[in-house]
Image 1 (cartoon, rainbow, N blue to C red):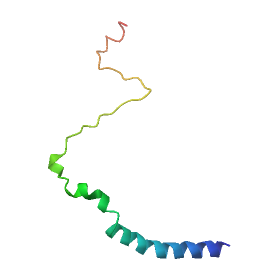
Image 2 (image 1 turned 45 degrees about the vertical axis):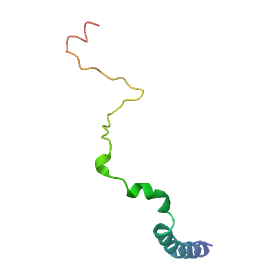
Image 3 (image 1 turned 180 degrees about the horizontal axis):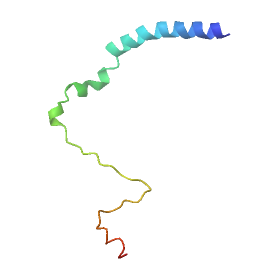
Image 4 (image 1 turned 180 degrees about the vertical axis):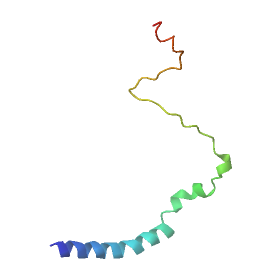
Length: 69
């Protein structure tokens, strides 16, 4: 049974790789035509900042300020 599965897995790979290559060259790129005209210089700058979810963000305080609370 294991030989049967491995044999058909190998046959599937042998058949799928050329089909995948043809698919990449021919059909799948038509929908992404807008990406060909994309100019990275026109992109908007985006800053990614860390966020704490379900946690307590501690403010920058003086050491004596914490005792006053």
